[in-house]
Amino acid sequence: NNSKKEEYDMLYKIVLIGDSGVGKSNLLSRFCRGEFHMESKPTIGVEFATKTIEISGTQIRAQIWDTAGQDRFRSITSVYYRGAMGALLVYDITKHPTFDNLDRWLKELQKFAESNIVVMLIGNKTDLESLRAITSDSGKKFAEENHLLFIETSAKDTINVDLAFNIILSEIFSLNS
Ligand code: GDP
Ligand code: MG
Image 1 (cartoon, rainbow, N blue to C red):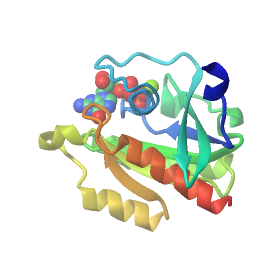
Image 2 (image 1 turned 180 degrees about the vertical axis):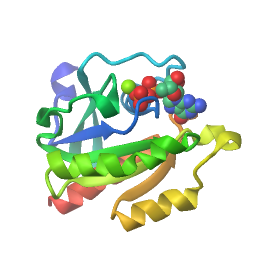
Image 3 (image 1 turned 60 degrees about the horizontal axis):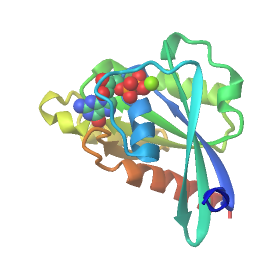
């Protein structure tokens, strides 16, 4: 029933950032709808999807924002980051340039996001182990140096996707309660 679906105690906005093609939209669709798409279908403008999970008896609604298009060359409006309590910064473990660009994304966060935003680094596409270009240790090291949470995922094989969202939402919850 609809009214029940609308019940939640907290609403947290989370933004997805990272280079084009790293799997942001598929992490979103896997988490919110249990869907994966082999074809990359470009998002039009900015979209968001929601999912409610329970943490310590509290209903937390995650409102997850996704952008499309040119990603690193698009002009990000501050609207995208406004009010965001968490950011998932995604790279593709098989594509070194997507890891090299993380510094750019952190600079953008510094510029547009609240200073207390919780950031989780995600190395996506672990199902492509034979094509791996970034070791888990390199990802972990970068995360430690920059005070980010870290996890590796596969949106395709449904590995660690729920866990990633649960960890960042729990962290936001504990910082705000
Ligand atoms: P975005 O541009 O960051 O939103 O990336 P998309 O979610 O559109 O994904 C880009 C491409 O990578 C698509 O062809 C997806 O099917 C593929 N992809 C996304 N996640 C994974 C994953 O975990 N494993 C594999 N093998 N491919 C993925
Ligand atoms: Mg996308």
